[in-house]
Image (cartoon, rainbow, N blue to C red; front, side, top):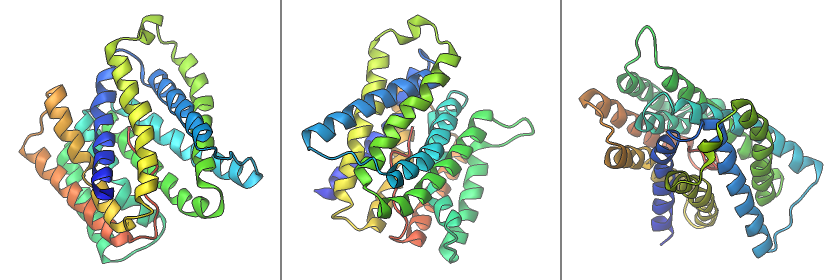
Length: 286
């Protein structure tokens, strides 16, 4: 049952990629991010009330939340703006590189990490087919993978030092505060916020289901070993590619599928190399 729940969680995070890609046809990326995290923060607040959790406000929690939010903010902005210029399949597979990048940041080198890095580099090259001009969306998404990896590395330390639910709640609230001025600078037209079925569906998947998926992850990680959890997470980009093909009509040529397969292999090998020491990502998807 826990493993099935985690598979469902990974499926939801995979669904955020095509959902975000579709909804950006109506609303600019930063405005959508603001609405997404506003909904997520409200749901977390409701959760705190229902389960009568205490929101810690001591300096250690606030400091940890500020540092972690900085990386989280950078990651989501790069990812959400980047997906506007690339396919959701590319975004999912490139984002998945954070599983390989994390042990590199933490300087946990072994043969698995080195092998995973090499395989992922080849896979990334085949997937995005870089040219002299390059693809801005793919480049921004690669930057988001590094930002998410830094965020995960921060969490390895902070979740052992401070109250984890409070740390998560402060990050959600801080993201809303940081995204508000960026949304105002974006100056989206009023019709972009029209409560269409597309916008409501996108917010439901990314702000509702994805927030709930994190709660499921916290429960599962108390039961399932971290190494097994990481291996299940490796299926996230595969879900995203399948859903993007089914709902958005996106396709990958043979070279793209080979590159995607190599990245998945690298993600699995990287997960094996990182072992159970590194924490798993908090909502490291679109």
